Structures are given as C-alpha cells and as structure tokens.
Image 1 (cartoon, helix red, strand yellow):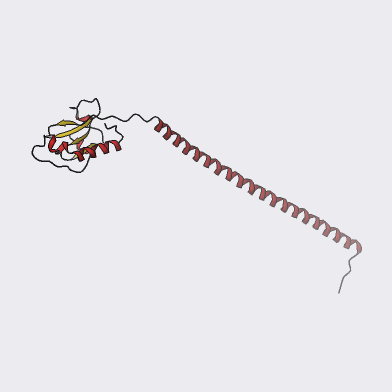
Image 2: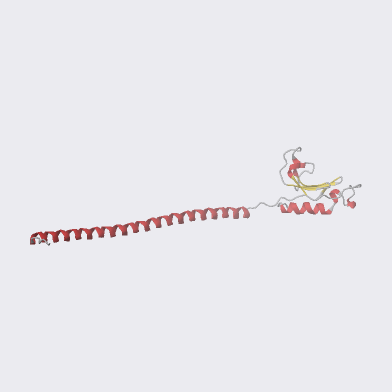
Length: 176
C-alpha cells in the first residue's frame, strides 16, 4: 500500500534532500581540504625534520673540520725534536742526555745502558721512583773487564746502543 504525499510535501522533501546533499558536498569538500592541509602539514613537518637533521649533520661536520684543522696546525707548528748527546761513558755504563745538559744531572738522561738498555718514557720525579719511567730493552752481555770498550760489554755493546737509538727516534728525539 502506498501513500501519496501531497505535492507540496514532496517538494519540501526534495528541497530538504537537495539541501542535505549540498551540506554533504560541502562536508566532503571540507574533508578534502582538511586532508590536503594535513598532507601539507605532514610535508612541512617532514621538511622541518629534514632541515633539522641537515643542520645537525652540518654542525657535526664543522666540528670534525675544526678538529682536523687543529691537528694540521699542530703538525705545522710541531717543535723541533729534542737533540740528544753522543754516548757518554761512565765506567762500564753508557748513557745519553739531552744535548747541552749537565751529564751529572740524571733527570736529563734519556738513555742508559748497564747490561740492560733503557730509554726514558716518563719524566723524572725523584730517585726512588725513577725506575718506573724507563722502558727496558733486550739484556746485553756483561763480564770482567767491562770498562774496556774493546770488549763490547755492558754500555759498549753495539746492539744495546742500537736498540736505545731506535727507540729514541721512535719517541721523536733527534739522535746523532
């Protein structure tokens, strides 16, 4: 069973439906605009994050460049190596000091050979703890008449002197 609506009622329903459709279209446009704005905001945020990461990376690279520039300056301004004396004989021992230093001042000694060759690797503080400031090399020969250089014992032993000279060079000294 169908009920017929009066013409004016049908017209008002059509009018209302058209009005609701218009509102729905406006709502859909607003949703579209909002999605576009959201996508735009999302894009802007992505760009902002990328810019932030870019500037962080630039700062990191600038720090590396500054460090490397400092290292290059340090290399350019590297002081002349400390020159050491020729071998000085003391009975059966031999030692080197810093060039021009008093040979009796043990704080300026940089190499010392009795049987065992030694090279100073730490600064002199006092006589009691100075043994901690030396690196030892391979033990050389000893024996009677060690004072005679011809016997090549103790401080006269060439391989012990060579070891000391090599280590001094590695430590940056100018060895004659």
